Length: 368
Image (cartoon, rainbow, N blue to C red; front, side, top):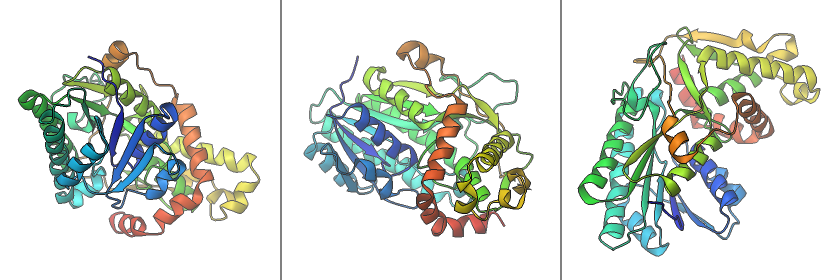
């Protein structure tokens, strides 16, 4: 059964993927209302939504998904019939050092949303509704180098507190369909990259550290493998799922693009070396960069102790969404990574404001 989104509530809307989804949705469907909810914790940045702030179809709400009465009121007042749930604590290192916040936000927060949706939609007789939960490939655990990629039938084997909290929320979402009849879908995506990504993640961290001539910390041998997905390709997949996806179904969204961490870092180093060689303004804009003293960016690579419980490989099999819903990634990795690099070079003020604040204190403490 197809679903027609009218008014959408996006949780975690000021975060990386959430804000990109808001931009994508208003650009694709300019006549549909979107309510952006975010608690504005460390990774939520109200500035991410500035490009759409003046749209008459957009409203920002500063609030917490744990505030069930607030969610209920929004569903009623805004006549919401679609929830796209991005809000989550998502950084594995943080979950190792402080798992409590992950359990509270990812499990209790998801349940708060489900309770509100059940009360307003099911108990209120709203039949055409959709609760879409955005999850991760990390719920499936890890793969060896020669194992086939994760399918939707792969058993859950989470290896970090973050992954376990997301696996738990997946199960709770599924239970609300089977127990109460809530129309739910779940997507499990691979590693996203693109604009507005909080600079504790690999790609923006490497870009920023090169430009400031800081070490590029590589866990262990750097041979961990990830499938990389450009953020708007992820959003295109979610769009298809909430409109055409079958209720009570899970869809894997991947980029068909496996890279080792060390090779990703090496590629970014090469691309930035090329930028400095061909753009004469780079040296004056980024005076600290190693290229200004005749060094290559790769000279900054520093191997550090491996992360506790570090999964070796993730890989997504996206056959189901491709065959059932006609999904295909638009960006190749070469086009996506160049777009991403250009965005960070053009938005230095954005990431400097973040890295000069609380994030810088955290990363310094944990990468000693």
